[in-house]
Length: 267
Image (cartoon, rainbow, N blue to C red; front, side, top):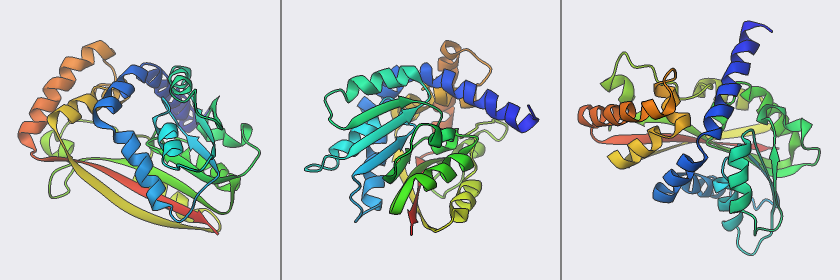
């Protein structure tokens, strides 16, 4: 195994472990702030006038995005297939969506979609998941192959935390702090999408001011706090995250969270 493959293997193992630990925290955060529901709804708005009947939800987590996609299409009965690498997250997702017809959950690796799916999809969503895939390019290549002509890839990408002039808030407040937003730089992601044959990509920025409570709740999720303090056990990270948020809020005010939506339509 070469150094690149070794990094990808270790990163994916760390992601799976962090997300196995994060199911309760994600649901607690979502109950208070409704972020992932908002992202999913916005992604659906951005693919209009498409009204997909077969959907693939890649990196579905605890099923928040899956439920939002289903509920956002009243009067329509889409078949939604959802895949995630974390069994603990999927247990929560199956419980959340157990009353929904036409919703199916699969435990699997998002970088090997062709292993699990043979049929085509009208739309494939990556809701807050693509930046956690070191092999994102292969995942997107396979996703594109699974799309019908006229189908659409919809991606929400966590771009970071910013001050009101658009500077990186964490780098501004803590110049020596290392905070890894994910495994995928936005430039690499855009270049990958633009290289997919027969597709046209649109890019949309989305930023909004966040409260101190939102900031702490988000950064204290195990999968997020590991980006700040990767070598510290989770329970020991929490007071450090709280101190970090207190200092960040003092040094940068107001704070904005940034996301980017990337919509790739297949001709």
